[in-house]
Image: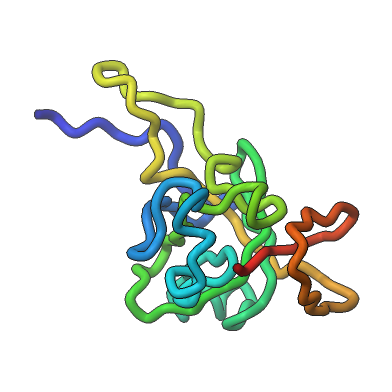
Length: 159
């Protein structure tokens, strides 16, 4: 099997290689696992993992709300500074959807390029950039109702 180059490469405008994938406690779009508090406890809101050096280079710290974008779209997620994350790379779980958070679906960032042989999408590498999202205020709403707020920069639901 010959390895092919990715369709897009990192550059000065998009300096991070974004990888998407699963979390241990979630499955697909969280329609079932997302309603189990014990499974949500390890990752209660959308996050993007960055190496400490990359976080510092982008003036980001653990817990900041970030605007992560590719040539194809953008999401908002909390920064999670992780020593285990490879430098120059970012990781975002694929599970978040509009049911649980606003603008947090990793698919919004994906390249439309597919492998010519298998038809599989190129989900493991897409050049990305990240900046801190400027927020004027933050709050917590505790309710038993299943709300999907509108008009907010960011929200996420924790069951």
